[in-house]
Image 1: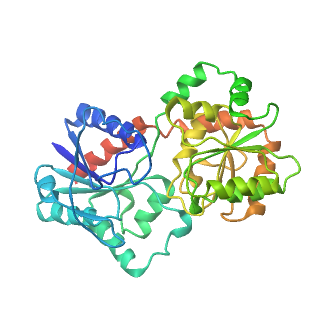
Image 2: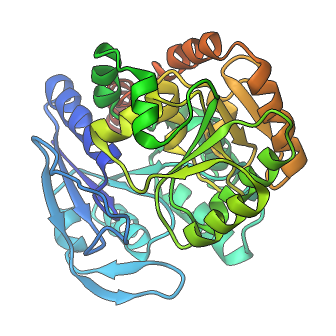
Image 3: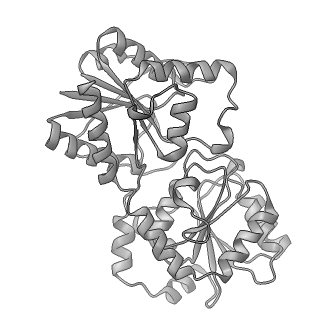
Length: 373
């Protein structure tokens, strides 16, 4: 039994999930997993992504770019022919829809994998996009969707039935974070190395510095506080120069440390006190997983797909209305007066359910459902 997983690019988080999938599927169902990528590069992400162990990987050449709809790739017929189940990576690529249609024509099973969707966008798609999502759902025998928002999208937009939806448990590997925690790093020394003052709360933003992530909203919110945290920005992007000017103008103490990954990223989380993700539009927000794994409570906007599942007000963090600087300021003020270490430990316990192993168990149940259906 063979499964083809068609997705766009390799990514560090997906690699650890694919390895867990392959191990459990092979052990329990004697299933082999192969991954096919539609894109030739990593779309400018700058990730260092190793090949997944025990998973065959192949990049499919592009035939044509479809305006507004990704790529149509060569090799789809061969991919479908050589596998028993085709798992497509969403709605947004022409190749995904073509592969699902070919699979149906050739008598193969189809699983629709869905990473997430901003809660604010549900129901707002144009009619042609709504039709494509509905069609993709109808072509699928099961949905491997992520979290509450993913389930809602599958039910409302893809026409799926409840029993055919399985939680993907979109995950990150916490190995670097766990290892660095065990080393019990000297927080004050690490803060000094980064230029962060001792004795002040540190709020961290991690992500690409682009408009939809709304990093400037954090500076606007913090500037209105009497007691201000120090801001640590991890990542790079086109807004960095403007953010540096804004921070100076508002008098917000800020450190920009550029892109970090692996153990280096883990150390940056561990010197922080809480994480802020203020996106206007975020299908999930894996930095929430990372921050919680590091024991950080989280402030996230209600436009992040992760918020309904992971951010419980006053328990694991605080949510706020996307784009509302005053509401974000309220959330930061509440965080500064909260018992952050206790909240962070609760966040760690919460994210312990969202692991590659849990994802593999859920995918195995999904494949069983498809085979028995």
